[in-house]
Image (cartoon, rainbow, N blue to C red; front, side):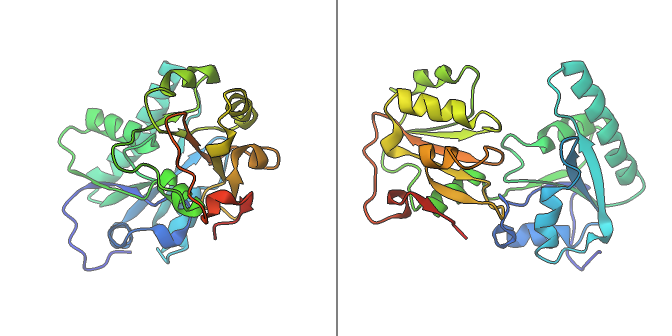
Amino acid sequence: MRTDTALKAELYGVGVGPGDPGLVTIKAFSILSSVDIIFTPVSRMHDVSIAAEIIRGVGVDPAGFVPIGFPMARDSEALASAWELASSVVVESIDSGKKVAFITLGDPSVYSTWIYLRRSVAIQRPGTIVEVIPGIMAMNAAAACLGLPLVEGDEGLVLLPLPDPVETLDAFLPLVDRLVIYKIGGRLHDLARWVKMRGLEADARLVAGVGQSREMAGELLDIAAKAEGYLSVGLIGTARSVRRVPGTRADKNEEACR
């Protein structure tokens, strides 16, 4: 799996983008084509690594793929135990002289499983040489798909996971021009209800299944009636925003971006 690329780190955290293999960066491809082992995250909910499928799509040799499970629990002790076990496998590989990478959807620094793995490795193996390779984020792909700017001029933007209760979003409405909502999951209808109650539907968009074959984009209320919230991104203009852009995809009810 190794190429002639000079690898300076022992462990790489590599962002592989939101789903479309075409959005994997040249640097990410170069690193992943050069390491000995690529740890691919797999949750208990899904036995297939989406991140692994992305890099397989750009021709990275799957011979070095090693699935590594990560928990979907909220219990702090259970999480710590699970990450300690996962990182011990990574540490063992590094100690054996292997150059390794851990891949993650989007960017490694934003809501990523990489963050927990890196912390745990640092505890078990202080001094590990680490390099992070940034990736294109889902919100960038969603904005491009819709033909919308995220922010311009002196406008403000906030990125946050869908809170519980969803009414927590109210506090941000007078402060920023656009809300970017991640981690919608099974609560898409809650978000749609809040958007309608606050009268924000005119500038509320959703890209469901960003980068996936089921990708669907358009007005949030329309898409919420026919799509799932998993791997979806909401882009919601607030009362401060008057940003509908005539002639862009944002004016259409539904679009497939790819």
